[in-house]
Image (cartoon, rainbow, N blue to C red; front, side, top):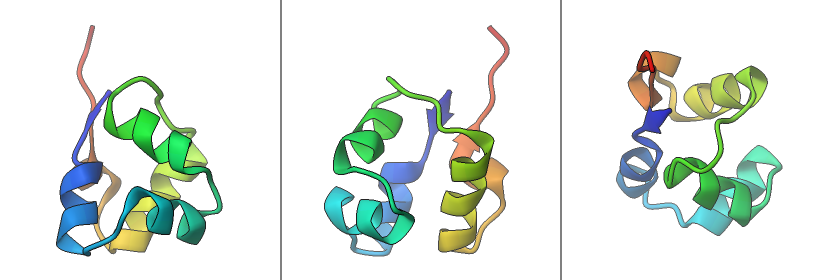
Amino acid sequence: MKNRLKVYRAVFNLTQEELAKKLGVTRATINAIENGRYDPSLKLAFQIARFFEVNIEDVFIYELE
């Protein structure tokens, strides 16, 4: 799943490590999501969207395969 996580992190001036700590996950998880190697759980996806105060669709782009 494509996402704009890196863009939102940049807007909020956060490192992967800082965002990971705020969300209670590892930096490796944030890195994997940003690089499309890992799709977050629905719970984590909503947590990320809530953190940035946007809709989940603003961060994650669903594409049919």
